[in-house]
Length: 305
Figure 1 (spheres, rainbow, N blue to C red):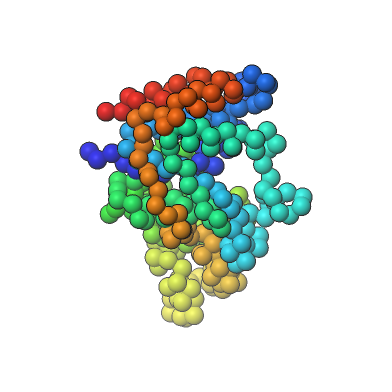
Figure 2: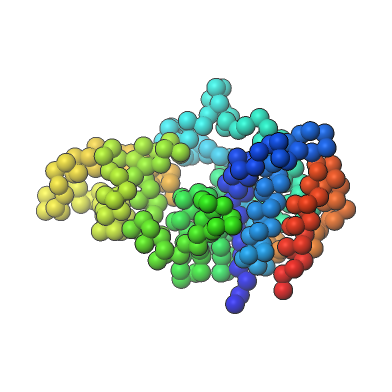
């Protein structure tokens, strides 16, 4: 079996690591918390050991709330804004850990890629569209279900319950769980909404109704066109709700869809068999008290057949 390209939604994983490991359980020699770093390195080590990729890219949020999405829907992720209305609300003790994670990835020789004006989802969407399969996407973000593509061998490793309890999602598994195929997932998400992203959805349309509509029409374009056809068979109440949400839906579908044309340039996705800079990794491990997770991820790199 061909080894996969593993695309890691880095922010999704290090946020989960931060909230999953108490700060008191992971501190550097100087007392600084490194729970997100420790947890993230262990998650990546577990993924490498379990999935045995030969290529790996950690996708980064260079812009967590891109202007082109906000221009369409000003409420997009607005609930995550700090008091100044500019920055994302990030725990004070998490923000300093992100540069340490990036330093560790660089020392390991693992590609970490972002692009100005785009989210990590878009970076993943671009690699998933352009790189040869098989491809596995490790994330806790359901929006990335839309990149599943059985024909190209693209699957999602959903980390909602942690990387040790992955849900491997192909198109059949997605349809069994949500009632829609990957090609319709973004429009399904726009219909039902997502409070975590500030997307209200269409008032009165829940998961089941959204899934039924997308399963019937395929995507929003024919669904919205059918609203003007008296013979389409909509219940009057549902037709009224969808008409009221028509303008929102026209914008939300663009906001929810991941980009597949991010200018990430040429990237060496090869996952090394040993750290690119072992001396630097050792220094980082010593400075931040990361000897154990550093050893585990190095062992994971070296143990692949």
